[in-house]
Image (cartoon, rainbow, N blue to C red; front, side, top):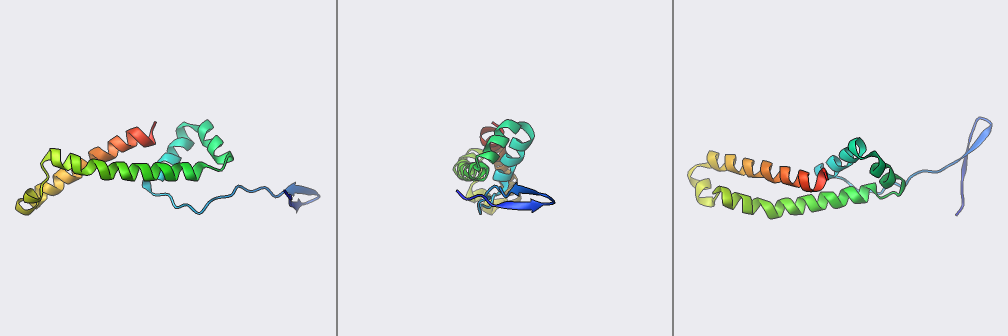
Length: 115
């Protein structure tokens, strides 16, 4: 491994930079990153130094999205948000769906983000 140096004044400093992969984090990945930085600094530092923070947050993002996709139909069914209700009373249907989405997000945050 070849090491490059940068001259700063009279000193040569090793040019060491962490590789930041080209991973775009979504809402849940960013929440996980912020949680780790604020509440789990040792784990955050370990993930940063091992250059796996973005991969970890991307995995959490993917898991959260798939968990939401699985939970939403079940929660909507149990709340009674059917296509018939959507046709008869759209505002009530929207309220029920918003409630189901908020409930699903709270579950996902508790299980995946803030563990």
